[in-house]
Length: 133
Ligand SMILES: CCCCCCCCCC(=O)SCCNC(=O)CCNC(=O)[C@H](O)C(C)(C)COP(=O)(O)OP(=O)(O)OC[C@H]1O[C@@H](n2cnc3c(N)ncnc32)[C@H](O)[C@@H]1OP(=O)(O)O
Image 1 (cartoon, helix red, strand yellow):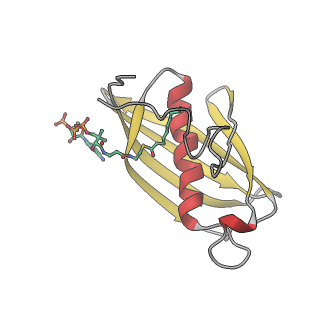
Image 2 (spheres, rainbow, N blue to C red):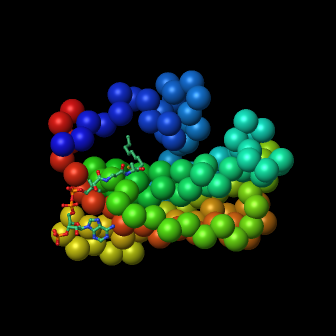
Image 3 (cartoon, helix red, strand yellow):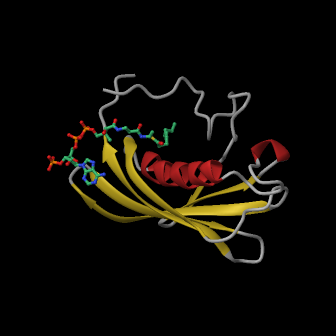
């Protein structure tokens, strides 16, 4: 049994003082958010840290499920980093479902730069879990 974070999700809570404060919209089968990284989010100078690229993709997929009433945890994730993601520019992250078998959900996500190039893609498996709070 897993308890949802106390309104302090690092990725989406407006209350988390060091969080990313992501807000999501849902259009058809797509879950979408935008994010502009600051200098505090970089690894290489001027480049968004890869772990945070993965966080954006992971959260978008989790929110696709959450929006549909599915509480699930990431069980496996593969990220391909194709282009550096610059800090200071608004990027778009999109997620969608690929399939579902029982408790196992397969989703994909991508991070799009201004201008339309895809900088990162991910595929992931999520497992439905029971919540206790
Ligand atoms: C407010 C908004 C809320 C949204 C918050 C979003 C947060 C963002 C999403 C995350 O990042 S979650 C945090 C990162 N993930 C974790 O910390 C998960 C850590 N792993 C676990 O806790 C458990 O491994 C997990 C809950 C994923 C699964 O444990 P279970 O005990 O529930 O399942 P189990 O291991 O028995 O596996 C069930 C079935 O799935 C299969 N399975 C497990 N992992 C698999 C995998 N990766 N691929 C394919 N099959 C898999 C497994 O073989 C088995 O198959 P069978 O039923 O046929 O025996």
